[in-house]
Length: 415
Image 1 (spheres, rainbow, N blue to C red):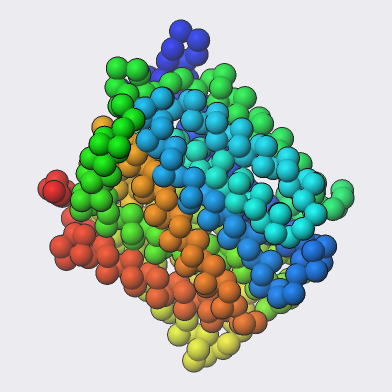
Image 2: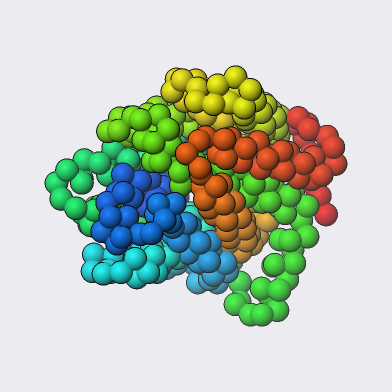
């Protein structure tokens, strides 16, 4: 199948570009729902009179925990009932939860609704990945995911600036109004244009026995389990950065209203990585690229932490941004390839596999990211230590998964 033959029905025919755009927007909903909130955290802190400033980060963590909790359900349900019904169900939950946030009068209620938003947006992440796996495999899947990521990372780059601009028009609740409109628009676009990619004859019966077999196949597949755990480790420091970014840029580097600009500059590294990976992965292979990026991720974190500990506790903003952007560049190479390698052996149960991978990576990343953010003490040391420690753990897991052999372009199937 060629890219322009991605999907067609009697009602719609998608070009490769529109397919990528829809999948990217589905997956980017979470990035938008997280990053657009960052400029609003001080206002939320003040409105609800939160005792500990670090507790404002729970607005992000609650969402991510809900995001993790929802993922185990959508995959098996999409294997049984089809992809589109589960996509629309999740988007509807997201929209309704977002509507509820407009009326939240306590911080606890807001956090519960943020968790519900996460539960809803778990569907686009899980089912979107399954839709890609329905149509592509191996390096082609990694290539598609790289193009998806190029669109995906645009929102994190501009979301804080959007949030700041929206707050110029009113209070922090207007940000949730914007999320409500975006969620509804994505739901309408998906319903009208995205065809079903799980035909009825391929759907599996939803039974405890079948789920047990699918789960056993997932957790006993060496590549799937190993790269899932590795993604959870490298996702942790990224979420730790997102959790504490507003405090770091404003309190440590005293950037004030320039915070969204520097956040966007660093995030641009993700877009560059996605573009280069999409161009190179078919020719070079997933493993050489992803393993080199993982080694680079650990080395960059080590250099950055050593500089802060032994040279200057508060480096220049440009050095900080440059080294952090290098880490994000490596992250942007690893993510599409690690996800593709984890999904590759399990095409027949793509929905269930996507649920497992998403739940583990998100839950692990959310917990690790919360802890890294919670350790914020007015310096960047906890963040950089989180990058190094979690990066090393990811490297160890990948070494065990590959039996000590890195950078190999071909790999025999694992059992």
